[in-house]
Amino acid sequence: MSGSMSSVGLGEYFVSHDPMDVLIAFGLGSCLGIGMYDPVARVGGLIHVVLPEQKAGNDSNPAKFVDSGIPLLLKKLQAEGAVESRLVIKMAGGANMLVSPGLSGTFDIGTRNIQMAHQTLKNLHLKLHTEEVGGQVGRTVRLYVADGRMTVRMMGSQERDLGAVQK
Image (tube, rainbow, N blue to C red; front, side, top):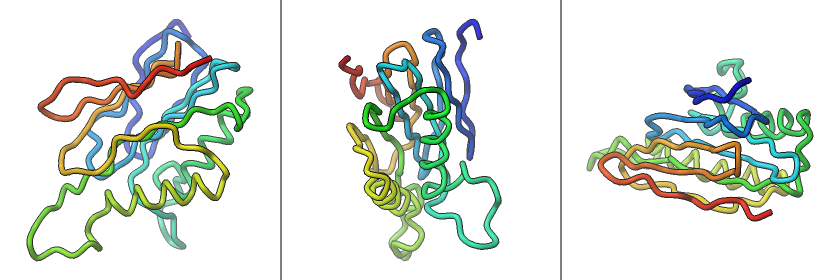
């Protein structure tokens, strides 16, 4: 690959070694963009998960769900030489987009996604390094494969850096 911007859509993931690649998840509302980067193997991946858990009868795409998507991305990165103890993990999204006085927390998919991500990472013994989650505004995230930097831009505000990876 010669370096490009790769859009990571709903229920998709992308893994790359190319330092010229930028992985982008546009318009994260209640969805989460979870980036993982190994600074030694110089491989990064971004997944755009939609719902908290894959239940029996749910869509068969594991990348669509937090509980199955995180292990999937981990496995794909390991296949490319990443070592789980070196992974730098960052997460953004999980907004509550359906704010209404009569709605209960059941409809707050963003919060449920965040909770499931924290639990799944804990179960896998993976450390979350940085997050920008919650609120009521959508976000776009970019993962720069060159250095593992992840930026977040909330609608109506400037893009901000969630931090470069220290080698």
